[in-house]
Image 1 (cartoon, rainbow, N blue to C red):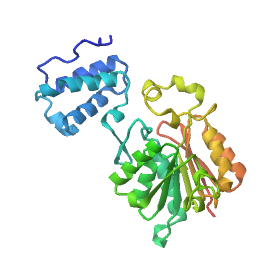
Image 2: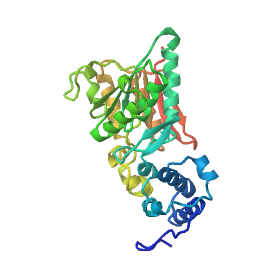
Image 3: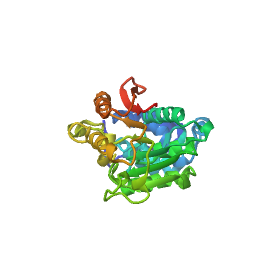
Image 4: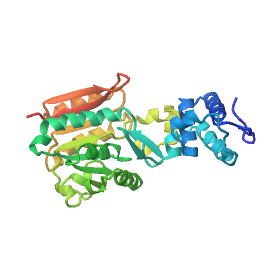
Length: 313
């Protein structure tokens, strides 16, 4: 049964372990996914501890002056607020990224998109030969993809774009956090428009950029499916970064239409997509007849999730 607004959720005296167990039970009753993990993340955030210290010191008394803060955090989590927004952080590809409600929370499956881009680009531009591609990440959000790519391959030239200035501010924070600010260019604009020569959204030198690799994880949720999303996503994550039109494919259609307008066609195009979408987009890319290798990559759950098109010769 849900806790009432005026009811105290935690009563002293309380140990750290008891606070964790009780909070886990509350979140479980509120149908929160992964209640124990969420509880531990919030407890570590509140008390500035790591997981090892939390396990070691579980019998220590919970600081009485922090009880009200702890209860407020658990109330927010019980209402569905993503823990990543509450603590302001999400790990991606082994690095912590700042996240705010202005950006989507990076997902583990997107790491597979990064892996695919790294592998394909390394084949075409071997570092041993001193080669480095120019990469554009469209709809960068938190900058997780772009910052990871430039961190993994410091010689690459990486540019990231987003329609949202608030998202770009978060990406800028993450670029600085990972000491990549001087190697990552951020551009505001709608999809590929900032990179189309002569377009009103393009400014030098972006409009003349010869893009070797295009990577994008754009909005792909069909409009009719938005209401059915889990509450953590539907009620808290930015709809601008979620909704992809009637069938979820509007951003992909637009980008595929814009590709021939670029200064050069990218030798690699890599997209993340929603369930049931990769084969449709793969066919649209095949219709352009520019890439001789078009692959679909499944995520950790075995769901077809990514399309990567490569011009190998």
